[in-house]
Length: 394
Image (tube, rainbow, N blue to C red; front, side):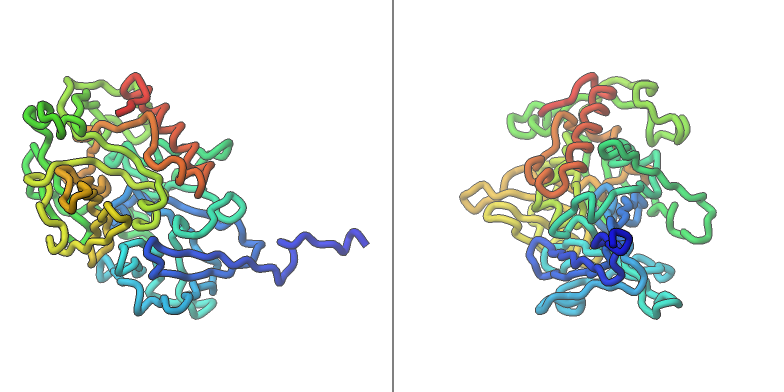
């Protein structure tokens, strides 16, 4: 008799339905998968295309089993709720994001799978109702680059006792023609960063902080003097030399403060677990009016908070708060994922100093995915001690 007993996940007809929604709930769908396929493997893609279409460090995607597609819950549908973006005529897939709040929900292949006759999907796992280790499991960092350090592969080498695999195929691998794609070098000077989404519809220069900023009673809160490492991102060293303590540092330079947020709102308007922000004054660094600038579309995520994303490619761009009297605050947050230097590289340590002592939104981040949030907080803190001599709190 005992030999005939089966656990629920071993039964051939055992399925589990997973539910996903964006922040505004316009995008609402389910996926029903065999329990034998769980946990679905999640990869974090760090390529420049994912970075600049999301405005984040990377995307959080899980491929659905062949033949399984999202089922949209009415009134939500691809046609009525989502914007489609194809980043190149040679792109193998199309990307979808919410037309209202900008949340990315996943990618769909343009060509059907020959076995099933259906296109394969990769869904954004950050927007599902549950992200426990039995349902989704983060297993790989893909297309990491020395030029984008520090990033989530820097700070998240493992979750608990499980190491996260780093996968970097050869640059000449014909299966991934866009893996090493880099946008053209921006036409900005050495003293400014280019902020630009993937499609180029949102584009502006972000200057380096000035001594006047450091002396300003408000702006000084968002500026720090910090040494600049000789690497990464300067062409020296190798990808294997990843010990931050081995890198020489130059004289301190004024940099903008940057932080990593894992709150619910950032997660559900971007479609990723974590969003990195830096702060800048507006004007002159940031356009005085967000709505109507380039291809920006604004979305109010709370009574006093507005977010702006590119309505063409979906990149998260800005986070702005009201004063409470209807006016805008003097400082706005800019998504780090859209920033590049004059050489076309993120090279973020030359421009930003990271708050490493804590994550923003930790409480809601842990409520959604505690193993991820705890591991990221620990990795960020350890990196800060190695880089700055402390887990920086500001």
